[in-house]
Image 1: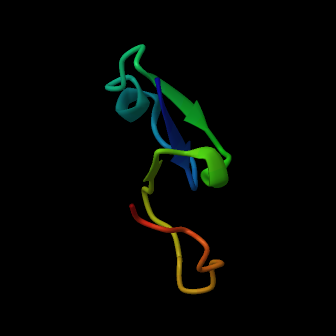
Image 2: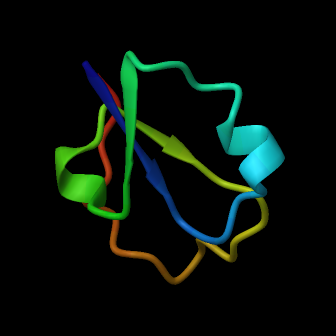
Length: 51
C-alpha cells in the first residue's frame, strides 16, 4: 500500500485515477509521494526529501 499526500485540494476526478493500492493522506512525513496541483513551495520547510 502506498501513501500519497496532497498539499492542496485535488479534484476527485484526478484522485479517482489511484486504485486500491493507494491511500490519500495529508501527512507529508509519512507519504511515499506528494501530489501538488498549484502551491507556493518557496516558503515550505525543506524537510521533504527524495529517496
